[in-house]
Image 1 (cartoon, helix red, strand yellow):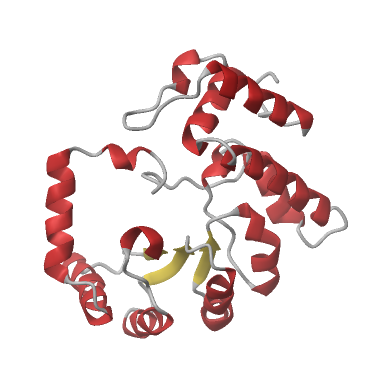
Image 2: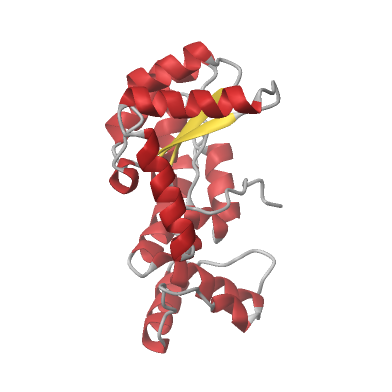
Length: 228
């Protein structure tokens, strides 16, 4: 956060999967009651907004259809913005579909709707069209590099910064990402217990950790404020 990155808790790929069985069942039942149609999703958001009933409420939508099986369509977003222009603030697009992210940005960014792709690999492309930034798990381990890219994407060193961010992301994506990030933070901070993950996630074994360390060292990776 000191490097200018925001914090989004309970990320989809993180330990939110470790909710209890009772919690998962309760939430699943609640979602099933609401239905998965576009009309049902609109009603869901509308009911939340109306029940809260506060002009201080701001909602950022989360489009990740490969996990939810319920897409946030362009028409749904347009309808929500029209009905609640001061409450529906933006969206994170984790679909992995750049064409969809681009369509969101082109359609809604001009009216102040903030669109965040889920990977820093799309940062330069999205910022060039008016995107708001990115919401990415790997910002947790590379905040200074990604913030530098955000600040300088259209400057002479922008392409180099994008390439560096891409290299680091690809290394973490090549391993179990959450376990790899926690192991890296543990090693750079000196807090060995930071490497722990909650079941059903598994930590990296020593061979995988050594391979990760070598790959990161090869691209000059470091976590500022911690020893390399």
